[in-house]
Each structure stands twice: as structure tokens, then as C-alpha cells.
Length: 120
Length: 111
Image (cartoon, rainbow over all chains, first blue to last red; front, side, top):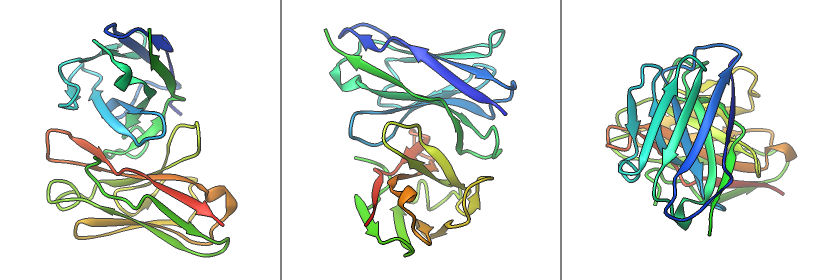
């Protein structure tokens, strides 16, 4: 079964770029999209955006100006870049597959999460 | 402010049943049957429990069930167990520019 393993810098300075990677193992089918979701400390889940295997992406309008998602098909890896970060971007970031198991728009397989703190 | 509305907290005793509601709008729950429910224990990634309103992911206990009426979806947990104590989130596909929306989450306490 598909598994997602994610990594990236855990501490980012204000105004710099947050970069995370999500690697797919155990298969190549990640469903319709690979999505990124974040969770600020003590708060709920926020959808950041999603990217398909062909590179087509959809972003949350509230973050769209700062977000870029990409896919490296040769490595089966997906990346998230978030520019000009502030303390408000401090959160636990997750990657998740959309429909890899369910074949429906549900987040069915999740990465383990990466805690990113924005601080100087 | 979350697009979907959930109660902040619910509680129940072991063996009892509880229901968590999730209220949306014409742009999400009112038009799509793509409601999913997630369980999250502290510091862990969320786990998918229910998708397409009523379908249980393979391996999920049949104590968890989902339903929907109009703009409100519900997650029912029967035969509460201590391990059910967690945060629960609903999610839906949406016609808005934010394609995927979440509820604010509900903290379940097993007394």
C-alpha cells in the first residue's frame, strides 16, 4: 500500500521560504491529487492546496500568492514551497493522498507530519 | 473561521453513543455527497474514518457511522471506548474557490 514520508526544515526565518517534500513509496498511484494540509498549534486543519501527477494544481485562495507545489515524477516526490513566511505560518504540515484507496475526494493516506516554526 | 461548523466538544461515558454534527452550506454539503470524517489523536496525523458520507474505510470499526440530511452531516460513535477520545474533523468538497473545506474540529472526551 502507498505510504507517504515527508521532510523539510523545521525552523524557518520570517520572510524566507518554507520548503517541504513528500515522498511516495509502495506504489505510484497517489489517487487524484497529492494535497497539503496544515494545522497551527492548538487549532484546526487548513487545506493549502493539491497537485496532480501531471502537475496541475489548485491552491487555497488565501495562500495562492505565496504557494507553489511541484512534482518530480522520476523520484515520486511532491514538494511544497511557501514564500514570505510569518509567525502565522507556524504549523504542523501534512501531505495526504486524495482518493488513493477510496477513489473519491477523501484524504485517505497521510504523511506523518512536519512541524515548522517560523522564528528569527 | 471554518467553512463547516462543528461543536467544539462532546462527551460521553464508555458504552454510550455520541453524535457529532457538521453543518455546511449550499456550496458544499448542500450539493456534494463527498463528506469525510477524520480522527486525530494528539500529535498524530489525522486518520480517515468515513468517506462519501456513509462509507467506512476498510479496517475502521463498525462503531463509527456517518449520515447526512440537507446541509448537516453527522458522525455517530456507538459503544464509546477510552481509545475514541480524540479530535474529530469533517471535510467536504466545495464549489467555492476553496475547493476543500474542513470543520473546526470537535474534541471528544470519554468520561
